[in-house]
Image (cartoon, rainbow over all chains, first blue to last red; front, side, top):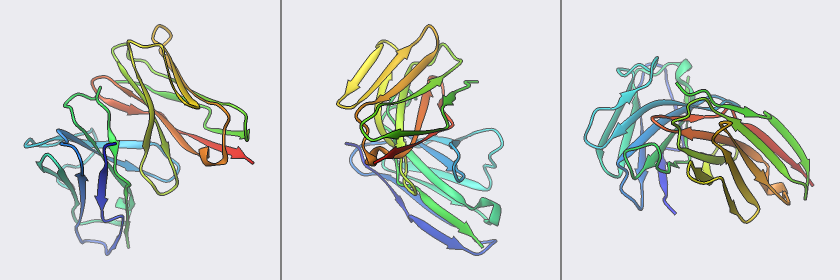
Length: 117
Length: 109
């Protein structure tokens, strides 16, 4: 089946630094990638949707200048948390889809645990 | 926007028994209904999905039923095993993708 990887799996950083998380589709071309945030024992919250070669579409309440998303190729999207603060600590999960509509399957990465000290 | 409700939030069953999780949604235009299993510290894994032109789909011990008129769909797991213990999320896809609130399933050996 379709495989999506994320790197790193865990990251600990100091407050004020920036952190980049990579999401790769390993065996298919991901026209659309999604970034989610998940708090402990909570559901996934969609942060943004990105189509290859286009600017990401952010959900209401998500700061686009803080969470920079780049989808430069059909197999790679990156999420950069800029000037991270403790409240940004969370589990970040990406997913990838081979189609542009959400009626297509989404394949999820294993997630990245971000801890900001 | 879409409103997805998932019940129950927690479910404990004896090994070998069946487990049923139900989701309701509000947008009649939604047309894609996947179920995901998430183990602790991992990303969600698609276990089964159904599209709006089908009423039921089965894959070994797992089945999903969809009632478009009533706007609800359910996950059925038969002959549960301890390794089925996880958090299960429903999702609804139409113009956007919305997740349910999750069900923590515990299968007691």
